[in-house]
Length: 532
Ligand code: GLY
Image (tube, rainbow, N blue to C red; front, side, top):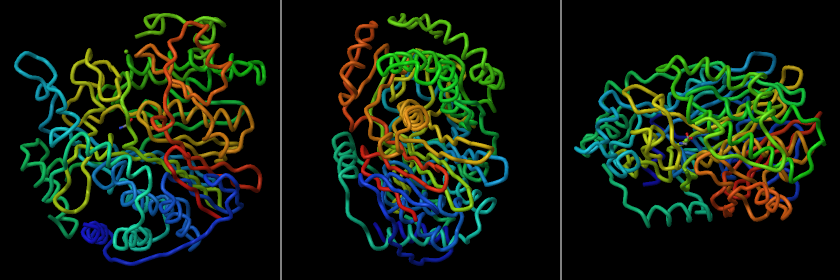
């Protein structure tokens, strides 16, 4: 199997080679890194090293990002990879930032009615497991487009570390073990064969057709990577770049930061800060549920996003936040939780000031549980990020409006939140995470800890977090938060539910502070950053 995965990667690269790199002067703790030239923070150490190795050879941040992405496809195949999709936010030094959207999209033959039974009830699991759960994958086209438009190296060079990992193998870590145990307790994967790029497409379609799924060769051939403008906001003097639709990530991150920006720095003690953050989150997730979807299909989403991230909206939300109380869900506008680490994020900065924040996914662990032939390529179950009916929540417990009901060619609403902060027009912080809707809240809290409370990235990613996604009407909180914060939330009237660290999102950050670079990989997923 490892050999076949290596061959599949080599077929895409055009050759099979090998790069082996060791670096890094790590700060304590082990998930932190301090350097001065470049850094990569991914949720697997070998993927961070793959990217850092490319930078050591003279590649830029995009070359390193693509190498990291392919290495993650091998080391975290249950999180992301060639059968999935993602978003890459790129800030080239001295140039305008851009977003590449290589999110999966619904096959031409899939619409919401195919997921309902004769009584109009949603067929359980059909968007989660099996061939009807699979969106047209965009990962390979996305990262290769990033390489050709913004990178400097050849496919062979950037894919060599991933090919070496697939050929040589690597130790199974605790997170991989947990993901395997989780999935073995739920179901089994299917399989078929492949050896070149065309054969990989054949293998994908073969597996899907064998199960009677709707994807066609035309769907694969017609898939296009979309180039988009990032969303822009302001927080404490930084310009914030966020992910536009079909993600909700940027709209929620920017809205919440702009709500909090209206409170003078230092004016909120820790309990008040978390209480205010939770109120802002309830508004952001209520807006998400009511207003967001694929703006290429529902053009009204553009205006709603602009309103969501306006300073007027932030001021209105702030005016409605009353210290010491929370309100019932309907007061926040209009729309639950299951486990997910079927997503991965990596952040990269190079010595020239180029920065990348990219989040990629196959959705839940091992995606649809369908493999493309015997290539080792895990096919996503991204169609579960759609609603089938607006009154039935998806795997993450999220309810969504008619704007996110599955239709052919539409891209499902995401929570992935690659985020870059600019100072003087240049990147100083790149962040993002994995973990379903908790990506938004975890990315926000890592950024807030660094910018608001002057924590190092290593401290920021490890601190306890809260999560509120408006529905269900509960605060999910890690036990390691200060006791006075938990008590304050309870006293304000929140139902506080403990969230084990293993279920919280995992955030990857690179931060430039003057001449120094700090990076951190969230200890919750066991990653390690690398750099020089
Ligand atoms: N599949 C997770 C997300 O896009 O939010």
